[in-house]
Amino acid sequence: MVSIIVPNYNYARFLEERMWSIFTQTFTDYEIILLDDASTDNSIDMLRKYAEHPAVSHLYLNEINSGNPFVQWRKGIGFARGKYIWIAESDDSADSRFLERCVELMERHEEAVICFSASILVDECSNPYTDTDADHWHRRGIVPDTYYLYDGNEFNKHCQIWDNHIYNASGVVFRNSGDVCEIIDLVVRYRYAGDWFFWTRMAMTGDVIILNERLNRFRRHSMCVTNVGRKNTAYLEEEVEYVKMMFSLYDIGRYRRVMRVGSLIRKIRRYKFDTVSRQHLMNVVAALYGSNVQAIYWLYYANRVLAKIFHMVHIEQWDYMHPAPRHL
Image (cartoon, rainbow, N blue to C red; front, side, top):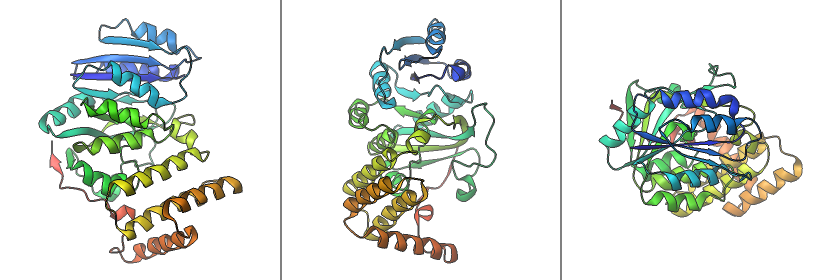
């Protein structure tokens, strides 16, 4: 029923926790596909040991590092035989009920192509961050033991456009449809934001389920791909490409376009780029919108100030259009 892809690169220190969280799932109709991207630690020895488990259908060891996690996604998807796919990143782990809950909802809603669970963020030692709410439950007024069912295109237009709501692949079970291979082929050229492109393209093909249970443990550490990318201009350049794609795919009004470009400029100003890199990114954004980027930023900033006083003034955090919660 489920193909579990475990891509790994130099995460031997996390593999035992990850594999144990797979082997103890209450839902057991799965195959496991183990991938290694030419690790230099003792990952390969550990993976060979895990490959002896009867649920493991493939062990593929790269001789040369691909330099791109989404190339590994594509390889795993090519091996996958299941009705659903779970990309269980090797530095994360999961609650034992994760697959059971996600598969149950995907079976209940045949038009759904994605089911995404809420997460507990943990550090390198698996200690939870107590001051981080990745799912913004405090703002959204989440009711426990519920889920949202979105039309995929509405989810893209009102959630994905502002940020990657599906922020961790380990929290996702997605349908292994005929579109998956075509979509992953489109996104492998991105190094940092490929998942954002992937989930958005997937959402265009069906409904999206957001499961309001914290069944995924997302590890944030210094060497995770997103953190590394945000230290240089590459991530934001890919985000600009993403915004350009969204403007071409959807009819987004001028006001919301200005606010979205303004949020990009805010990131450029906040990150500690050198002067040359900052100017380069500003030029990239100017090419996206063809206007005075500083004027757009001050419009965006004024909007944020007014929104704190008058809640009817919209910025991205009030643009999310959530459907009524459904009970599990």
